[in-house]
Length: 540
Image (cartoon, one colour):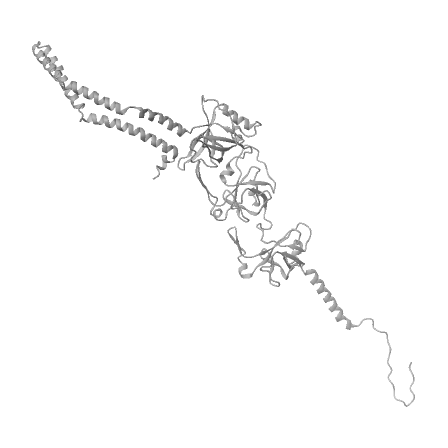
């Protein structure tokens, strides 16, 4: 309220009251600061990558704040914390990932520690010797998103995004099979063995990866074999040597081939299982499912016959020797060698025939089929068993020994040859050389007595006198005959003389015939025991 001042008093200033302003500029600064802070928080939240946990079996080489996570050598995250799990069985790693990696953190994403190591003939992670180990990532875009992962003990052998197909192999023995060894096609590496494991039935199961376009070469009838090292074999069929490459000699490997066939070339899907053969020769051999067992009883030396020796029919292998034993009856002093053989009748009868193969093979015995030992490799002395047909042979009964049907046997060809030559030698030895020599001496003595008799000399002299009294026409002819008779007698005297060359040579011939017969018998007996001596000679 305004009051008037009295006259003479000093003037008093009065305040003017107006309307209160709605906004003060003082608030601009904190508001702007709040907006900037909120924007920074939003940016930090939206641009920050996710935090993940990875569980490894070991923390070797992993350090918090130092170890990086990389993909194709590009850093996409870093390790923030390393700690043991509650049960102390593993190591849990907490890592901060880049924003761009968020879309690739899926259920199938894999993490692994990359360290320097030598595997399958290659040096991997050599750069980590200076920079230290890092965690590698194999991203995936399939499946739901994930933040908790279980790391791999080793880096995967297939690069992410590599095209190809996986197949399975089943083997009886491991051989040179190992994770990371190459898979060869025509001696060119086209894939790798990923891993292997022992199955419950005792066989080996392995997984391989074959790159494109070589995976299209694999069909249902493709053959895989163990290509590690050098395959060398010296057996009854000769010497064989093969290998894939120098790398396969050192570290091993697997090779495959798709042979040409008259049958259908069936395609196979990924994951198809193949049998891994022991070597190339086994892979090239046809597969036969029927295997029958027979027993052969030999009563002669089987030196050189070993387990695995082939059974041949018309020069083609149809089986192999499974076992060789010895049987003796000391009461009767009879010795025999039972040989168990395995025959694949499909080789003999053709595949796909719906017949009783066991009966059909034994029917061949009724038609004269017999088993006979033969020389497989003269160099090594290895033996084979040949199934041959003998014409006009006596019928043989098919028996049984040890639960196996038996196939009759005949002596080996070398033994038959020895027997034939032995008969000749026996006949030579039966010749009475001593008696012949004595008779020859008596004959020579009789001839000498006749030739040297004075009566014969006197008779010739009388004939000469008679010739002188005959006519001139007859005398020359008679004298000529008498002259030749005298010359013949002189020659006979020289030949039948006990000290003559002819007599000595005749006696020497008779003695050498006897020695030769004995030497032939000795040689035959040695060759029957050592047929390899025909090439290598007699051992000292």
